[in-house]
Amino acid sequence: MSIASTPRPPYYAVIFTSLRTQEDAGYVETAEHMVALAQQQPGYLGMESAREEVGITVSYWRDLEAIRAWKQQVDHQEAQRRGKQDWYQAFKTRIACVERDYGFEAGT
Image (cartoon, rainbow, N blue to C red):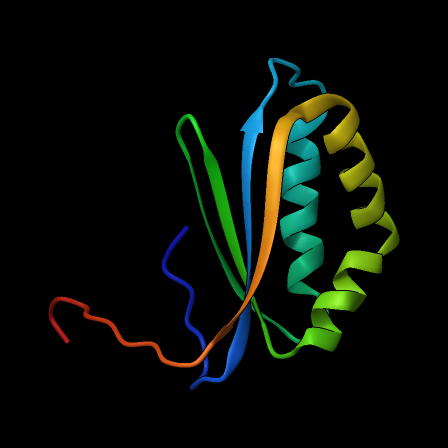
């Protein structure tokens, strides 16, 4: 995974922070499916993810309508249900408007 290439602001970030349970059955496959499915959604801009003790996934979206549509996507709803039932001790989702971004890349 790399740093997501996003357009000029404004755009939106969905920040999903989680604490996992010990249950792994189906988690990796579902997570991979969610990434592939999100990439197909209108308004999807990119994603970044890291996991140590706390998992943090940030997905970037064109607008709030695209985020709402993703939340309602049928396979995503099933993954949300499984997450609550099996995979997460706790999670929090935050939605933020990105008003400014800047960065650095060595060699450019």
